[in-house]
Image 1 (cartoon, helix red, strand yellow):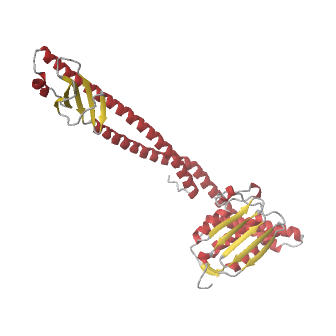
Image 2 (tube, rainbow, N blue to C red):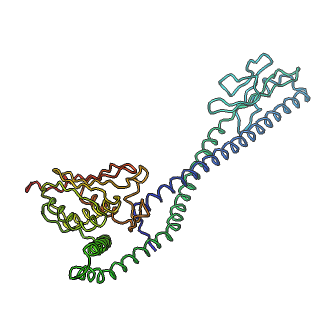
Image 3 (cartoon, rainbow, N blue to C red):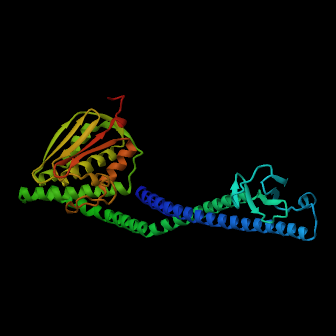
Length: 394
């Protein structure tokens, strides 16, 4: 099953993966560092032991030569005392070289040490009757072995990190599948419900238009409720089957005034006064998309306004704005109000779809949105429609 992730699901996926991969990277880095240090110490200890062993072997051969009565040990014997792995040097009691395969002068005060790419082992020879005072061995391969070990550890860590990243990615998608299935089920339910609502809503609207003998106040209440149902139906229908490919030229100001008039029953039901200051502005865009954009913004302003409040609708040049005296929006809610199924006030109802449609239409049309709002002081939604203004007709 292939899961198509939404923008918000992708963001959650990337955040989780980022935290997961950062934790994995730190863990692998610590493990790799400790493993390398332990291995390097073990290799150094093994090398030190082997060099010490070889030096003691040479020392024993010198003592055996003395026991055999070979007089001039230095000239006769030293050139033959060497190992297959190490360079060797012999120094007298005054630290002068007797025979040496090493160019540099060793540190006689250290038994084992490393300089550049070499390791040295220095053994002091205590025998007084033999000219040799120090035996020095040099090893040239330990540094290269440590470098090879480091490269191998890094290679393994990179491979493990990539493997864990792939596993984490698929596990995250697997964990998201139940959530995605629930969202799909909710979308299907809304789609089915929307189709079922079409006929009764149309019947209600037609009945209200022909009804007689009802008090005007009750009739207005019925009209407002029916209009709200109709607006919700239009919003759901557009979210399920929106087609913004068909564009045409029209007067945005005229459409705006018409939609304000259409939604007046909702405002009258809450005794809200709507002030309209709209200029003409010719645009080239999908008219149905703009109608949905206007309806959702206006209905939200009315919905979240307090009874007997005021709403201002303005269109100056290419800047359209809707301001209300409603409950306002906190800074934290501003970041999430455009998310689908997100409602920042549970008491006012709704599906939490309207503003997500507003954002989708605005992005597709290149309309810039700005919000100025404080809790308890109302909200102002501003829209810069410069991108859709028809310059040929303006």
